[in-house]
Image (cartoon, rainbow, N blue to C red; front, side, top):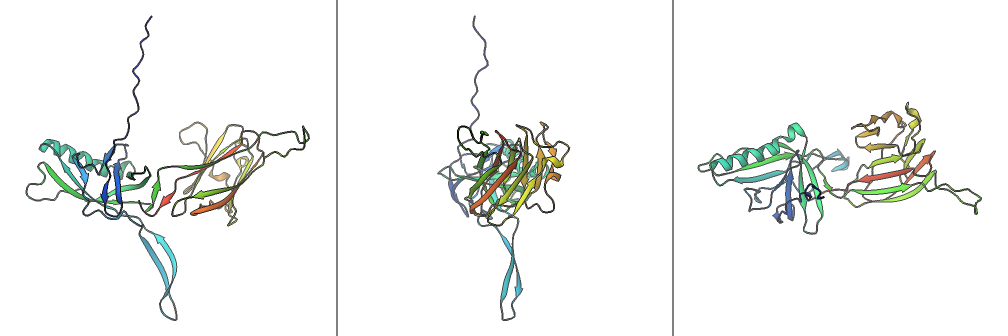
Length: 322
């Protein structure tokens, strides 16, 4: 007999955004993604809203504040460099076939920006013709006002939006990862002398292709009773001791996620946020180190490891410019 089946619906593909020349960015396609996940192409002039190239700013190198000390022989000596929040300026034109269509577009895009103050940041996404994508988390600051001139506000108007970014650096869309897993244990004498890697997963060379340091995330999979993470060039390290919790040592298949900025340790018990295990770190000696640009040698040691024990390191590179 015939079977009734649901139609197969392919996942929706993001709209293709044509690249244009953008001041401070260059030849690229730019999309704004609001907190709900809706994508607003900003460089497609065939749409009823798009960015105006003239007036775009704040998308180049990150801003810095320099702290210096006077030098007794004249001049000064640089003491500290502090990256500052970025404030991109984003002029936008909105139009419609009639006044109602224009009003609907104006309200919808304005809400897409302002809702970042209530629902979390939106994202500016810059895509190059070769497929590389960098993103910037943004909050609305000010500027969603019309020009207030004759003929505006009927079927078209423009706004000069100022955005605000906690982190001034662009983040690469592609997440990089390193996986190290303990091998199967073998009898030392059968069939010939064998050394298992069940304790030390070995030194690993991690490459950060970005322009600035990143703070990675770690996922530890048991079994394991003590895990030590060491950055070899500086000697910085931190230790996760599951036995310091009421749970005890990690069993096979159990996982803990460690975020290094801000410090966050969550045992994955199946609940949405997991259980807070930040107290299982070796405070105050713990140093949740970062990865600088270039190559860094790191090592992971798992006590109580067995087949299936693993460490996964993940991060997204950060860049000065889009």
